[in-house]
Image 1 (tube, rainbow, N blue to C red):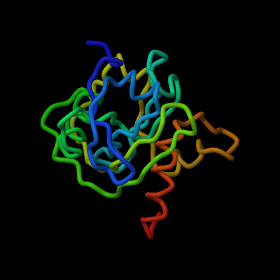
Image 2: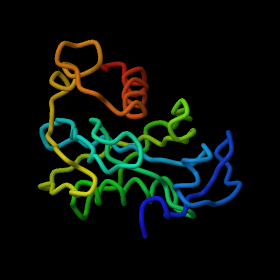
Image 3: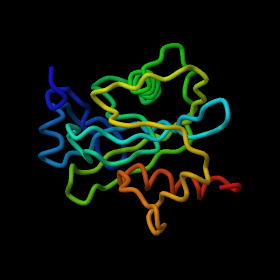
Length: 176
């Protein structure tokens, strides 16, 4: 099954399931669906950062400071967070990601809106990222990451939903 054929729950503005549809249809019609974002830190506290492959349906070839993806039909946010983190990192046996916050993201016409559940997990295992999802990866310190944010001389092009989640996390973290 291709990514565009994957069946997703369609939800309303209050995150209540109102139907199901293939991912391609969900994106084309701008239907509200569910996604998970997992911020991964290694044993030294560095953040896993990657560049998405050019074949991604949304935000191809852009950088992301989260792993994650859509929540499948009938799947919980918690189940999706662990599945997506293990798949994208190419590891098994991660601790269960801890939920941090949730928000409704509006892509401004790119692919509709999605409820975004943000998680954190520590990965002390060697990673072998999924080649279909990750074109490049590295672990960056918070300072190195900050140097690549918009407005900085060395800025990278970040996925906008991940950047929104990052900003919300910074606002929720008094140390942030």
